[in-house]
Image (cartoon, rainbow, N blue to C red):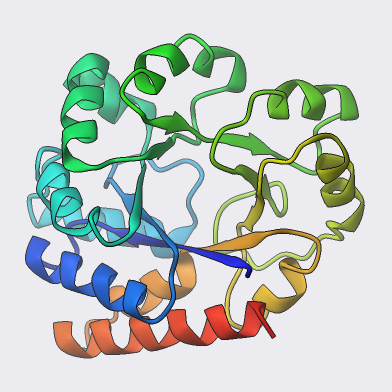
Amino acid sequence: MKHLVGYITAGVLEDAATADLILAMAAKGMDTIELGIPFSDPVADGPVIEKAAMIALEKGYRFDRTYGITQAISGTIDTLWMGYFNSFYHKGLESVAQKGAAAGLKGLIIPDLPFEEAQAHKPLFGGHGIDLIDFVAPTDTPERIKKIIADAKRFIYLVAYAGITGAGKSEDLAEISQAIKAVSSTPLYVGFGVDKDTAKEKVKHADGVIVGSAFVKILIDESLTASQKIDRIATLAGDIKSLINE
């Protein structure tokens, strides 16, 4: 069974509605949630997710609210946070690890934390049962890929192309996927540019896909009510889950 990871920015909806949305997605088959922590300079994100972050920040979203949302959903769905290192550093890494673990957090995706720097923080988070997810890109050399995936936990995040999320570019991932799977048994998930139209192709040589912008486009659609957003995003999650497992 191929795995679906979904990304939703916290703070665009009220916290209770954000939790309801994620639980509705889980009910449609989503396996893991990346709860996005809004940040003012989201360097890895395209315009859709960047706009969602700005909306959340303008509404007054604060990091500490992330714990409550996590508490509400983590008993039902595997819960990760996606955020930028300054957000965690500012709150104190030990505090984040302790409170995150207490809320049920299982992993962190920090796109601006280089692999070499992440090694210094893995023992702290790992000691609380929180995995730091490692990224591999098509531009990485074979030697670097082996180094990155040697101790990868939970899953390996394969960036589908060099760029930002939601750009919709296309890359042939067969060779790099096969090279990774030849030396690692850690599940391989493809992210960046994955939507209903591309998911089936991108999961072909992987164990799952990571979908963000396709969900967030609906999340920031001002013509929809909160309940309509929940219904449409959950339906899309179910459709993508079915497509990647056909």
